Image 1: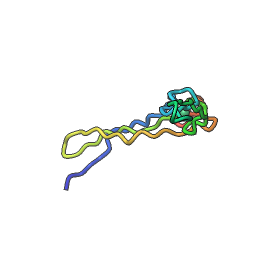
Image 2 (image 1 turned 90 degrees about the vertical axis):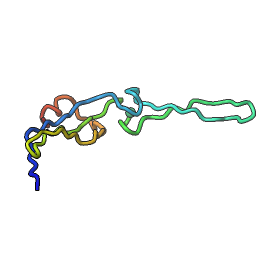
Image 3 (image 1 turned 60 degrees about the horizontal axis):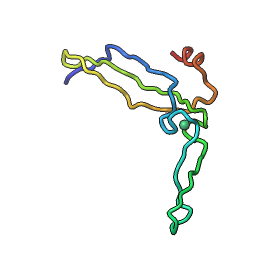
Image 4 (image 1 turned 90 degrees about the horizontal axis):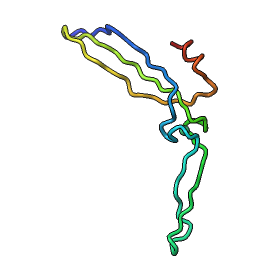
Length: 95
Ligand SMILES: [Zn+2]
């Protein structure tokens, strides 16, 4: 059986603009208010993905794995979390 070994690991933690609201902190959607006149109203709501902060914490881990004498790249799926009051300072502590 092939033996796999992690050669190198890099944790990516970064504050990025919220992918859902594009950093605005609010989301907009069009809602039809009158089918007869084809009238639409723009409904604005606070973004629930980032608690209206417009920024989220983006994390993934990048691995280099040695298997059968060759190296392969592996990246975990990107996760986005609410900042919950965390700042750049806190991120440096995690790193
Ligand atoms: Zn958002």
